[in-house]
Length: 113
Length: 287
Image (cartoon, rainbow over all chains, first blue to last red; front, side, top):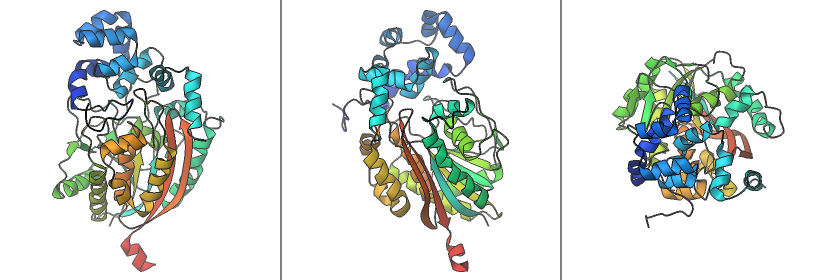
């Protein structure tokens, strides 16, 4: 276990940065509308172009954010990918916590009470 | 001489940009947040700043993880925003004051802050949204900016204490600038939130209150937290508090809290807006 382990939290540290560079680089490219369209047109070819590892390709294919984080993805970059599928941070919060989106929103609102 | 007239801290959640574009300021979900800016607008109309020094973090627009500076200072006369890939509208460009930026850069490096200097720098929502909140309407912004980017993304992050010192160094540099400028400082992002992992949705009202209280009276109390402790207390992305701490550091005079608005949630975040007054030593003598 790494020092300072915080439950349910992967610090985006040196290990994650090294592991995730290709995946995060691909997500960084999604700042461009043209690249987002190219990804949607041929996802396999786009992922190959960025040299994703097998684990990263499988994680992207699964649309599972926790798997993408395990493969080195950084959430700010993954959010650009999620945006292509029309998912916002409540949607991906719900997915990662295994809740419905409404239940996740309720949880956020409850934190203010 | 330039004077530091005060500071503003504000959340910069991207969906605020969408809410502005869709005119949702009065919707029940959004009004508790946007209403907190009425005071800010009155204050800005009263203090009339010429320049805003903005401490923020880039989320993958200007910087990628291939080359990521811990501290980067803009030194341009114009800063553009571009598509960030999240479906928020591209913002107006913001005017800079390159001469003033270079003065701050010279001060920082003389103070042994080995910063990155950027004559070309795109600014992301963490700059454009606070500016749109402070000066709404979409017209030309009445202040020039100096954007200062702090790495809150790739660990190791700079410590809280280091960011406080960075702010203090900026404060000294501002006050040594010969031109009569009215300068405000801005810290953006936060407060507590976490977007990633099984702990997504984490918010910590008690810790946020502690930070908002201590920012005025005792920022050193926040600076005692290590980065892992900060992640634990504020959430993985709540470390954007570093931008607020740097802003507070730049308030070198007698500081008082003028305004506070705190609302949970905006998107996944505990949204905070604060205004701080800064009475410089010279002004105190004159009073």
